[in-house]
Image (cartoon, rainbow, N blue to C red; front, side, top):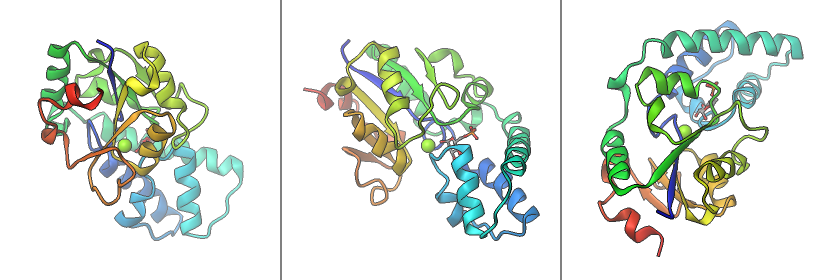
Length: 216
Ligand code: G6P
Ligand code: MG
């Protein structure tokens, strides 16, 4: 087969945004910064370091580099507490069917995530072995919207970027896929993800013939 798929993780395969929110909120309370679920939207698809910068900007708080490093470690420890309780019930609707469908069609897929916790999360929900390869926050130097994560994914699939289809729930991710000259599929709010080549509310909506029609 000469097409392949690259999946974002958070917001596409599982909903970890709620756990990121709890961990960031905990930290924000500690720093006396008001942090809401609306603010949390700004952190979707954004790297851990950048997320902290956004949070500190919201609260007009300045911290030393050392303090930031400490805070990032404790935020992640807090987050991992939630992740370690995850199981297969948290796989989002449509994911298992879609992966089965890709398997039966012989279409390969890899993960392209900004998260350094991606392998652990996939292991928790029992999906780690299903991917042809994992590109995560540990393997990239430039975060989305830079296309690096997806370009490495294309290499793992042994495919040209234009033959890769990216599923993403974040604006930064759609931008990265478009910059990589891949086919971008927005999963979630169509208005928010209006730069995507295709849009679906969730993965249950992907038509059977989507992959045969998408690349002609
Ligand atoms: C994903 C999430 C972001 C998160 C980033 C880094 O892209 O959507 O909200 O900040 O991964 O995650 P990590 O698990 O490395 O903190
Ligand atoms: Mg995401």
